[in-house]
Image 1 (tube, rainbow, N blue to C red):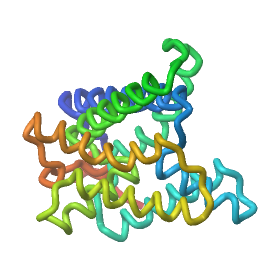
Image 2: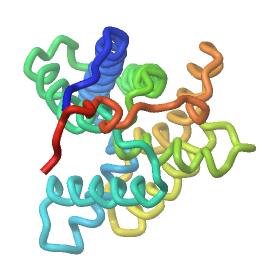
Image 3: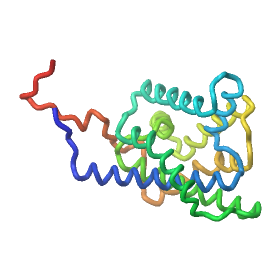
Length: 223
């Protein structure tokens, strides 16, 4: 048994990592605006208010549930899932430690930064989706749902999912802020913007699974 990794695969991993780096930087910037949590974090916070688990533990639990849904939808689990799980948090911590951005003063400035951040979050999603290396649990859910709703733009699919997640978190008592509303309203259009610019349809891309990188030679004997 050997690893079947080509030069193009390495380039696509770099592409995916670049997308995650942008994502980490955007999360860092959005946190500095103090305009509120994004929908998935609101859902996790709301759940944590009604169970003995901590906020962080609920975030992990929600990710596991979404991952199981991805499996039930028979979506590809690739290298991207591993990179997403490990590197987003690392990049957020790195940029927080570097603290490259000044404090955002003034409500209008914070709103502008938040909107710009969401636009670049759409770029990060495009880079990850177009790499063909699989996606993190939430983006996999978006693409998997989009495959079943072919007549709806992928950005609208993402918006629909975010609205449901937001409503669930809000009804559970999760904290809602102006940034939450902006996230629900603009993340879908931001993704659709970059897909339109690069003429990209994430539902049509063929993602590599983890098993695609394993080559079993005829001379190998499996016990």
